[in-house]
Amino acid sequence: MRADGPTAVILWAALVAGACEHGEPPTPAGSASVAKPEIAAFDAGWMTAAPPAARSASAATRAAPASPSGLAAASPPASAAVDPALLPQTRDSPQASGPAFAARVATLWDAVVRDTPEAATPFFFPVGAYQQVKDVADPSADWRNRLLAAYRHDIHALHERLGDAAERATLVGLDVPEARARWVEPGEEWNKIGYFRVFNSKLRYEVDGEARAFDVKSLISWRGEWFVVHLSAIK
Image 1 (cartoon, rainbow, N blue to C red):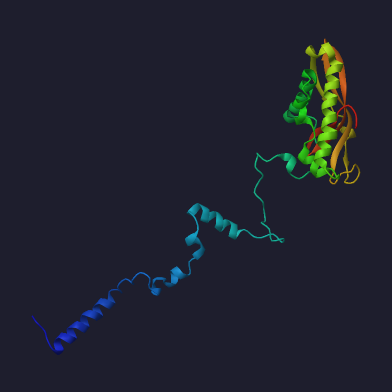
Image 2 (image 1 turned 120 degrees about the vertical axis):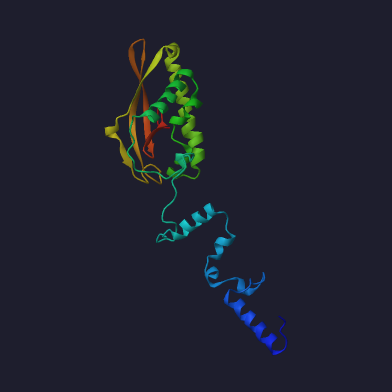
């Protein structure tokens, strides 16, 4: 049936009203009305951030309470690849036992027997730690030119003392008089930070069943481990 005139106008108005009751048409792209209230309240920073995993990490960081200094409340654990000599000193008491200590002693003994001083560097006080400890103008140069040079010279001299017995000598172990070890306070030995120190350890070995020994003049500690700093004499 065709409607015209006033009847057509009334019918058209009724159709428009009915459409509005069932929902509004989509808003064109780019219109300011796209951002509905619940979307506008969303964290806009996450929209441009990377993938969900990275965003989760960001959320955890934002949620972590700050320390009084304004830094992160806790630092992540150090990687196993980090050189311990570059980490801060501790007051952990060193023990002359355990696989790591035995391995370092073995490097010194092998270096003496084979006359290969360079191979014994793992048992020598590390340069990164010495740079933190020593209160001199150039700790790395002092470490290299005085201490390490003397250590290698002494290893060569001990090899000479072994002579022909080097091929028959067997390591017994390193006796460390730990009861006489003490903590050296900063400033006592041109040091900026403290360490444990012990004098007169004995590198014990046997030749054809006969007990012998070399003196190890001074050991000092780094982060709870003993290292040689003077082998045959303090120089």
